[in-house]
Length: 67
Image (tube, rainbow, N blue to C red):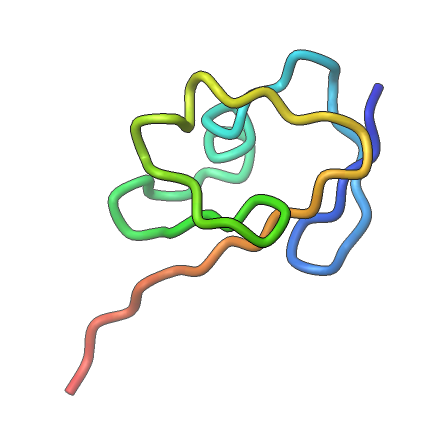
């Protein structure tokens, strides 16, 4: 198990968990979010490749339409 921080909240995840796995776990719509990993915006094409490790800090921003 690894402990990470997700939007300011500490959570535990399985080792070898990718950013895409995290997105699926929380049922987020990949097309409507941006992911910041340890202070750097992560390109969408890296979501499946980037494995999370202990003490990673993730911020998820959801885009909301309106006017």
